[in-house]
Amino acid sequence: MGYERDDIGSDAGFRALNTTSRRGFLRIAGLAGVSLSLVSAAAQAEAEIGFWAKDLSNEKLVDMFRTILRIRWHERTMADKMLSDPDYRGYNHFCAGQEAVAAGCCAALRNSGPYDQIDLVFSTHRPTGHAIAKGVDMKLMCAENDFRATGLNGGYGAEMHLSDPSVGFVGADGMVGPGPVLATGAAFAIRARESDQVAVFFGGDGTYATPHFHSALNNARLLGLPFIYVLENNLYHQYAHYSFSCPHTDIAEAARAYGIPARVVDGQDVFQTYNAMHEAVDRARAGNGPSFIEAKTYRYYNHWGAPGATAGELGAFGYDPLAISSFRPEREVRAWMQRDPVNIARATLINWGVLDAGQAEALETEVRAEVDAAFAWAAEQPLCNPEDGLMHVYAEGRAIARQFG
Ligand SMILES: Cc1ncc(C[n+]2csc(CCOP(=O)(O)OP(=O)(O)O)c2C)c(N)n1
Ligand SMILES: [Mg+2]
Image 1 (cartoon, rainbow, N blue to C red):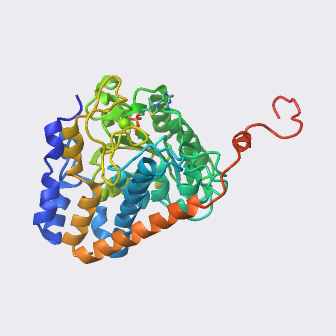
Image 2 (cartoon, helix red, strand yellow):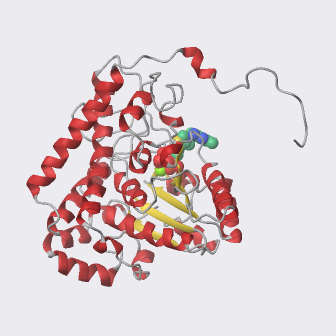
Image 3 (tube, protein in one colour):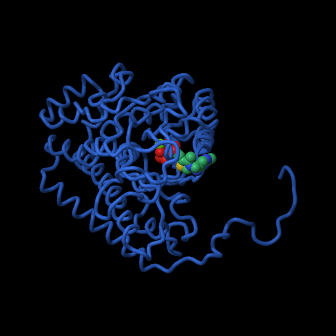
């Protein structure tokens, strides 16, 4: 069954961050690569990964922390709205706890520029963290998620159909499975155009047991595509532990079977996810084919909505009333919350002398104000019309029957 639950709380790396100077930490990091606090023996054995984050400017490092905070406060504000505002209509698959995967991976991508040069992200049914990290406008996303006509996609897409080509966020996808096939198709087009873009798919541990996982990886390897599969292993698909559908402890092993370089990283540490993604992006842009990153992570709330949660409090505790085949023990949720991506990023930056505690707090206050303003703006937007739900579904006017063009 996955990696041992006891390992989850044993965060030697986080302790190292707290007790060593930046220089000392970097020396250890240089020796140990990404595997400081890592959960997988396989990952520790492959500690040759470069520690790219040490070369980043302070501004870029703070920016990654800001992204984590923006995702986190978007999550918490939305959960509180659901629990306390009867007029709120949005639904959500919360990603609180998983922010460092989206933030670190997207920080290594090209997120602005013309559509034929920007890197592309294909997301899942749990898309809001990826969307924020890729640069989607938070106000427009808040309006979209609440079915407002001025939202990102006219208010008829909402959370599971968010899409913003202007930042290379191709979109969320309510179907578990097809995403990597779409992304490898895009990667094929990128290669055909001789562009140096990369196509990235974020997918859960639940995607392992779909045929798309295997065919996408197989074809990406055979064709040497600029494709990166970021697998967010949060241990569960809906209410079942991933060991119900996958025989591997590290799903990365499956990618290796297709001949694809694969890393297992601590998904709670934004600098580890950044490092692994940096390496994968370099490989893809150089024409050296696909990569696979498995980020071990955890979601604090339940599968969707915020069942079990309390307004103003982070996490859903206790027995999940919607559980079918399994449930998440309260102790497991609390253990993962000890390795919170916000705290890890903040502690690292303070330890490195990039920020002091006061500056970190001021940044968080600023982000909370931004998120509050985004939700307030969205709440004042006009609602969409129910009939808009069929917009762009059918062709307008006559469609001429034809075959082969
Ligand atoms: C083809 C398909 N089957 C079933 C579902 C219902 N469903 C929605 S999310 C989910 C589990 C996904 O688990 P995972 O890939 O681990 O992602 P996570 O929710 O943990 O982020 C399932 C089965 C679906 N959306 N699509
Ligand atoms: Mg999962």
